[in-house]
Amino acid sequence: MRESTQGINEGRQDLATINQSLQGIMQMIRNAASKVKDISDLSQVQAEGARDMVAAMDEIARVTHENASSTEEVSAATEEQTASMQEMTNAARELSQLSDELKALISRFRISDEACLNSGE
Image: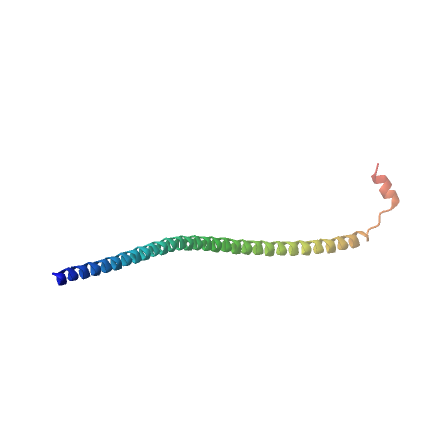
């Protein structure tokens, strides 16, 4: 009977040890589950941040494209204005030459003072 009682006591001690081990394992599982949840939450936050960054990069690309288009338009307008200014310069030069020629032609004609006075009557 003593052996039987001793066997029971040893069995109880083994069960207590097993129970403690299982409780330790359960605690480790809870800790691991908590860490997995934290990692999952952080991954979600990081994914949202990545989506926001992609949206921001798309906006930057759109603005850059618009700026490039605007720059091309300004460049074309500047070229047109430069060509117009060149045409105006050429036209002014031609007018100046025509004016000089007209002065030279008019200087050939001499009107007497009497003719000027009679035309005023």
